[in-house]
Image (cartoon, rainbow, N blue to C red):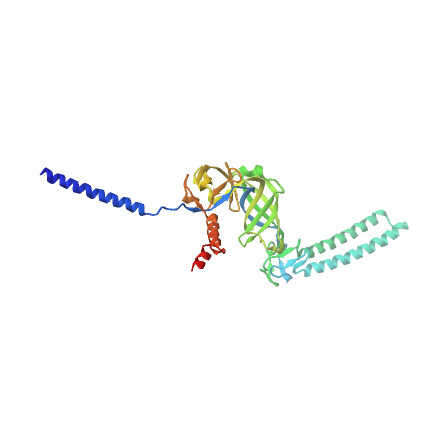
Length: 371
């Protein structure tokens, strides 16, 4: 019995040893995994611009809706949709028949009163009229002149003119319509420059000042930023939103920006130069940030950094020395202490091998000679 049991144990041990040797041979045959391929970039000095970003609404430089001053019939409409007009240009005319008649009567009375005044003045100078008669006739002449001016003013009220140069709105009224006092007739907008109103948090107020440059981008023209400057800062802060209203002025050649447009606004507050690396090189979570620095023999080392501004694919960092190389593309594939391969070096090595075989006397030439 003992010999049978011992024989069984020896057979089991031999089987285990055989399996272990087979596993070791399998591991020996398994190819070694090459280091990951990554790209390295140097730490560079870059100028960063501190900005405040906001969303603003475009408003016309000047805009007014002209309404009918009196209830009257509209005789003529002299503007078209979106027409460019100059200051003082006649846009519409209300009926003014009664006012014209009143003006003619007032002018006739003015002429008569002036003639009578001149006659009494001549008599007064010769001593045949009293001072009271002269003053009475002078008052009559001035009254007639005032009546004529009143008639002219009533006629002018019925002639709708552009208060400034700009563009008219779409026409919604036609000649012959009876308009009541206060009825809108036309809106004139000065679009030579645009006012952009936007709000900025109270905490950023100290970084703002009149004259600062701004950049505005509209969704309609994403590749054509508009540049202007801050014209005014509201002296009162909204107690509910804790924000301040800022107004910027932007030139508007071609009237591309329309009142009511929504624009993204960037205010340049300061410039500074700092160390920068590609954004792909910075890893981490929450408050911790780090990069992998390329060391001797292509070994990487994890280094903690602090980040700042971003610009054009670069991010501001502190904790590195200019000239260091950090792992950019492929940084997620490495860990502290790993060895890596660089994409640029691989290409140069392959090119060198090709050149070596292509040169006279190289292995390719020797093989050809042997054949």
